[in-house]
Picture 1 (cartoon, rainbow, N blue to C red):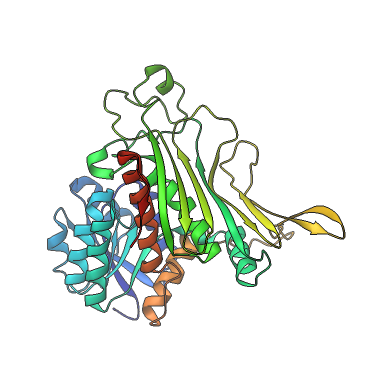
Picture 2: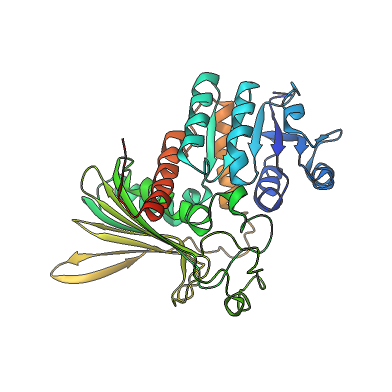
Length: 372
């Protein structure tokens, strides 16, 4: 550290870097400095250094060279999914702490290599699941921890878009991403669900993966991000999983970038317990424009609904509300500085990758996949 501030280097200067990590970290000048930027497209690293870096920030096109920089304490890995493993392993071997964007890896084998490297390094490690820092997700987690829902035996993890295929970056490239909506947005919904349930012991998974709309020009034309190219679209357009946990609980995971279905719902979860149920309705839903948390239960002989109400504004007060990205970055940096635990633990993110991988395997083989 320099002057008590964590010195950060970045591997990957694409959309998630410019839209989430760089601006979030810029809001925390008391905790960190951005000192090194690496991207295979040098112009992007130069732009990042100019807009967000300290004076004299270094620019690289080879992350192995950046990792030789002894000033860098922490590395944020913000690359396509298949690069998560080699970049993270190299960073740990170089003695750096690592924040890796979600998902941990494109398959279980790669994730295990990352876990092994982390355990050998003695450094801090976390994965970018910022949805845990949303107000309603935090509230639901606390409710579950206090047993308000009772025994949670059924859940749904929602990541459904009607037509919202990302047309930038390498999202439709299977070789670089490992998959489509399941690994991209399904991973957030599954993480939220497992975390609120506090259940990380899967027994088996089955899955269905569909390549139905991605190659249809008429489907591509109605995309909210502009038409995608059906000729270069390689990943699934929707995927669904059915997960059985060791304690008998069941999770249904639904994900899509393109699906002929009303009522889109993303980064959302539904929990059903013996005492009550709860549903997070995301702001990306067609029917619910704001993030909501709704409890349902029986009360005095009647079925009731209880809505989570976020704090309202106060007249003439211009207090600043931290975004999920800033809250994630703040908690992570403080965990490093104070030798604490990150909210998103590597062991938890590893299970998410295991389940996603099993759903893909099940869809490919037509068989139920069992976990060791």
